[in-house]
Image 1 (cartoon, rainbow, N blue to C red):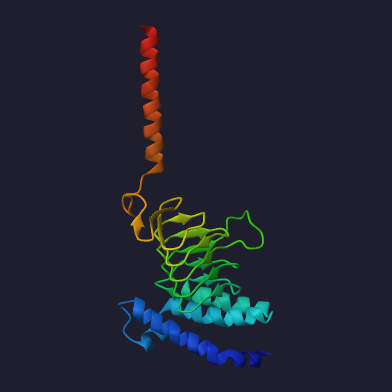
Image 2 (image 1 turned 120 degrees about the vertical axis):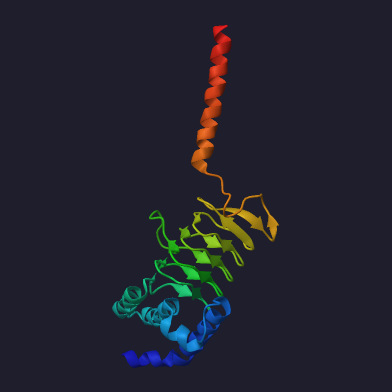
Length: 221
């Protein structure tokens, strides 16, 4: 049964070659193709995922999950075998990356360690994100639900994305919001100087308390 997998060997090899080349382009620490092939956990996870995905499409579900779980154990990166991944996908460092079953990832996407492309637990069917082309998702970011991330978008480290993000955008914060669109800053926020929602709420309450104190004093007069 396994010999049928050889039908797509050339395609898998060409994808692997592209994956190695994209790591060399995006990671200044990468010294050689052999180093990337043998020592980069992100590449190993992607390589094994492509095999698992091929098995999954042939309805060899147990074998597909066996390959994906083996990859997770070896790399710390968990990708469901049903996930659709485009060309030149780069997982940098990679520890703690989790990608759910119905996620779709376009071409030339980069994700960093701790990224989750997951579900909210509220949806059925399509439960995970669709990521466009040339997207970068920063370390620790969580993209949750059947939402869409547009092409050429950047998701800041630590962001929690719960809604669609349009193309050519930069999104930051919890929950994430767009601070730059088509090269134009939407407001003057950046990844460091993000308003603290708790502090903002406390300030609002303090302002209301002061207003009430003023009203009480006026009534006492």
